[in-house]
Every structure is written in C-alpha cells, then in structure tokens.
Image (cartoon, rainbow, N blue to C red; front, top):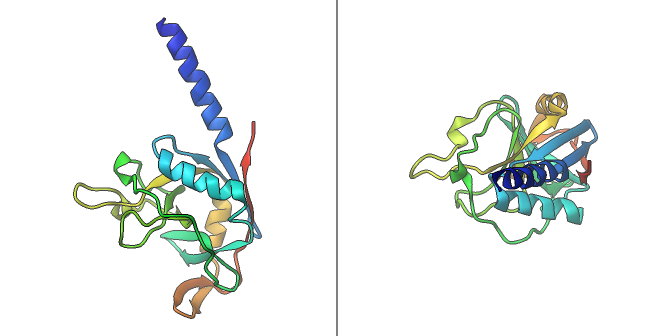
Length: 181
C-alpha cells in the first residue's frame, strides 16, 4: 500500500514539474522558470495570465540593479493593461525571496497582487513573510536564463511620467508560454 502511494506521489510530482515550466521570451534572450508547488494560488494566477497570452507584448517596466526586475503590467508606452481580480497573498508558505526566484508584485495591501511579478537579483530577505508582516509570495524560480535576467538588470533606466527605474530602451516580453516535456 505504501509503495503504491509513493509511486502515485512520484508520478504526480514529476508531472507537475514538467507541466509547470514557463518560457519567457524577451528581446534580450530567453528565461525559463519552474513553478513552486508551495504557492498554488500564485501559480494558478500566473499560469492563467500565461495561458491567455496576457504577457505577450508587455515589458519589464521597473529595473533596479542588485535588487529585482519587474514586469507583467505595462506595454512599451507605459500603458497599464487591465487585469483579473487580485489574489490572496500566500507569502506565509515560507518560500524565500532568493536570487532567481519570481514573486508576485503588489501594493501595500497584501492581497492586491494581480499580473505583475518580479525576479529577485539577490537574496531579498526584507521581502519575506515574518510574523505580523506579510511578505511577497514567491511562486517560481529561474531554471535557465539567469544570465539574461542579469543582463536586463544592467540596462540604463530613467523616469517615464510618474514611473521611475524604467528601462530607456524597452525590455519586451515577446511571449510567455508553458513548456511541455
């Protein structure tokens, strides 16, 4: 009986890991990310945006070297794209904001994350959940293309309207799509 349960769990976990990879093609190169099973709400949310083609044509609109790169909400003209309803913050799963992890961007309201995400350029422990202080929910990690993330982190940035740290030359998300085995 235990061998059957273990075999089923291994099949389910193996299927999850293969079916839950996403390719983010940018005009600076490709980034592949693997979903985090401890963040089912954020993963489901992100994948719904990926599957609908929402991210295609958007940009990384906020780049702060030695901190993070953020995208998934604005087009190259800095026009914000309409999103689905906000999701519940699940940062209390204790998945840390380590280098190469993706997390949901949000406002000061912990339950305000929609489509925007960021990729950590370093360990950002100040963004993690702590008792009485909601953090930012990590939902994936980079499995290939961290060199591309680092390249994006070094682009020249400036102000565009009320937005700061905007790349002077657009860093375009050409396509985000699920990868199969």
